[in-house]
Image (cartoon, rainbow, N blue to C red; front, side, top):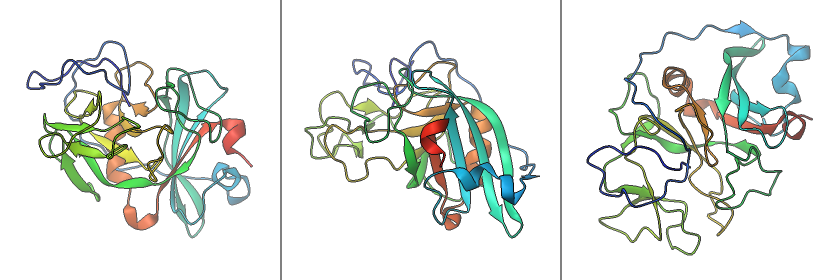
Length: 247
């Protein structure tokens, strides 16, 4: 989710408050990503082995903060091989909610916090820009009429919505927003769409500020992750304070 981003000129939704991010933003051009450089992590000491909620995942993105209340976190990506877990990317600095991570199961709509836990990804990636080469997920282009319904009382709460076809609730979040939504992935949080538990949690382009609940990294780094993620490998993003996500 984002707050107060600069919208593209074509956006006709300027009067809405954004749910994911704040501060000044600066446009940046898409940057092709180089191939991943992998580092083998000794099986006995692999950080992934100590994470909660790995399950059957063969790709894991770990987003860990040192404490509650900070909007800074460290992102590291790992993949599982026959020889154990391999570090593919990171550690990188990521930005999370302006009020840090919510305690487990305590995320609420509008609290400015990133949910703690282990989550999959939605069935599509999205963006204002064209689909980058090498993406394994389907791609959804963000047009000016596309929004995310974050109204807890709405029938389409926590869903991507074409406002020309459906009522998007009160104060929906525009998706045609640059640079934050140049490229993005939906984090599968609150897929049951329970009112009030939070919505519009994405992995998206950072503009150097905290978010209102999403995870954000620089565009070049995000593109590396989006090209690396493979739905056949059941990827998970495990995020929270180090103490909350570690066994």
